[in-house]
Image (cartoon, rainbow, N blue to C red; front, side, top):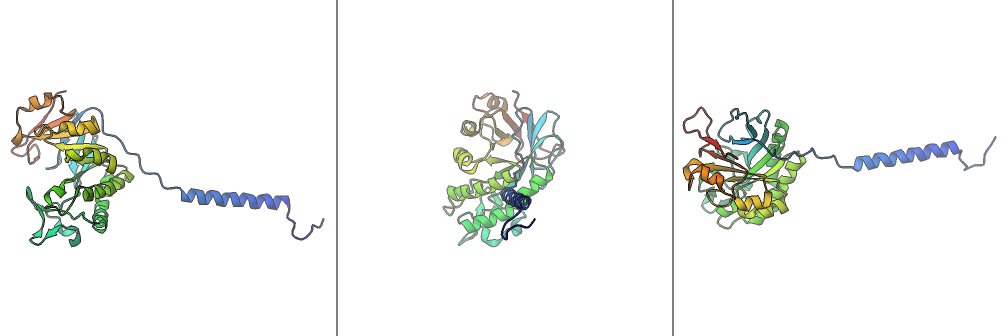
Length: 279
């Protein structure tokens, strides 16, 4: 039976409608962002070890271990990757583009406590982008290696910059690299800078804090008020105002707190010290 020009069969109309729906669905699916890996929170129980001076098997009751990004994560423990994100690591200055290093008329600006570390220049958006570009490979490398979290050291580098850097400069970089870490499936830890804990959590979306000597300096409450039990503290043998047992007993001391030697050496080296608070 013939049909008038311009008319279409019901079957053909249904087929075209179906094809159109498929195309819409394909476009919609393609527009959906790839979900980020799941971020796993710090363990609520178990001991802690800080192994930046060298990796070694932790005690059986240790469930949380921090190691340098060049090391492998600890088998069977929640592993946090250490990254010096605001200063150069010793012997790694050549890895950084010259424009990312903070300089003055006298030359590179050095951390007075660590004379082989140069401050990174976070003062402008292009410089922060260049720093973040290099850090991205390290952060993603930690995730690919199997780490669960990352701690960014020297957030307070602006305090050693003679006014060349500000807290806002460093917060802007912190927020950027925290997003990169979260997208890689890592929790993000604040390292020191107790007085900026609230801003780092709220503006940079940090998840926990790694504190050094917060009991010795009376700063533990500044961390726990913001992060609750998600605070890890390391006290050092060479700067104890009282016994470690007394520091452990203080009400403000965080749940996870250990005593280590200043150089964080391995158990087979002279000077090794490791002691955990008895809770």
